[in-house]
Image 1: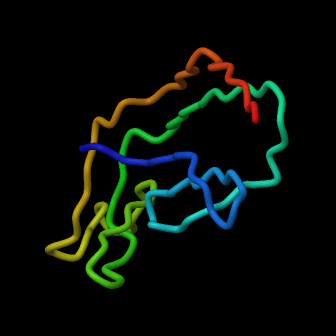
Image 2 (image 1 turned 180 degrees about the vertical axis):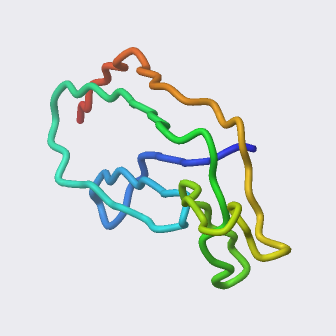
Amino acid sequence: MTFLLEGYFEWFESELKFAFIRKDATYWWYGNFELGTYSIDVIYENPYSAWEQASWGDGIISLMPMRKHPRNNYLTPGIIKIEDVWVGKIFTSPLEFCLIQ
């Protein structure tokens, strides 16, 4: 199972913006970058070894940490669940970049 998140810089209305896309397809925009030196690094953390389907909204399957279900951990047939997911934390090395005119 792969959880894909994406981030990228782009020019929008004569301003540099950073767009970040979460796994639920929500966009976050950061802007107001001025000339200078910046650093970017990423931390990915997953403390949950099991995930299950949270919704079927708009054809997108959302996953959430698996809940404890009463009565023998019963799940409705057809619910997607994944187990033995990697648990831990990863840090990328900072990447420095300069904005110049």
